[in-house]
Image (cartoon, rainbow, N blue to C red; front, side, top):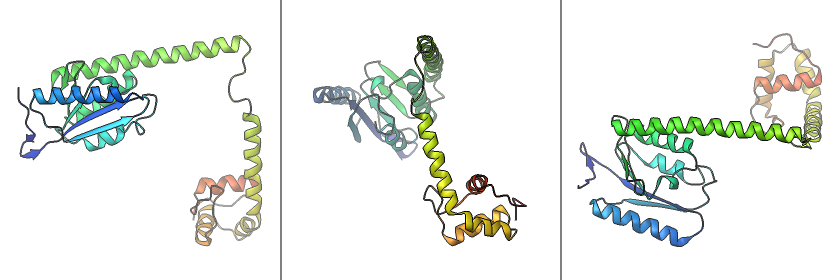
Length: 238
């Protein structure tokens, strides 16, 4: 069976994705496996995406986001096995669903798997199967988490960050301190009868930064500061 890189007058692209944790030998094995597979099918690989990183990292770090953005309609993706792409059944489903939707042809060598878009019945069945497995996986994780928390609680383990009270207290103190630096300005605006929207505009025009060091105020940010200072405006619009 021969593969070509032309579809409806458009040049298609074939990308091979390789991921390893640490072993360079495994990367070489993946590459050889993909090259042998593509040669047997007269497929020309236009680009290799190779990365050495743990599967526990997110999609951005594993260059999955970059890979999916590069693949266009009717392109082809080759991997040595599905586990190179994803770290969970749920992620497998999400990736395969997106590839099928874009009509990207996926070749997973070890699984002897080829998918060809949402109009292909085999692909539909496979994607739906992974969706069901992802749902089961999600329920199992949720159940394990709840059981683990309940067990820890029954043993007297205090859950959550033990310093959360101190952290929240320090945050409130910092927010109150910042609000006080604006008391004079905001009191003057309120006494002038300016609406909250007008005060936001004045703060932005004056170049006064928010507590997050942002140059543009929002209505909700102003309302929070006014509340801390105990100031009330007559109107919120205008």
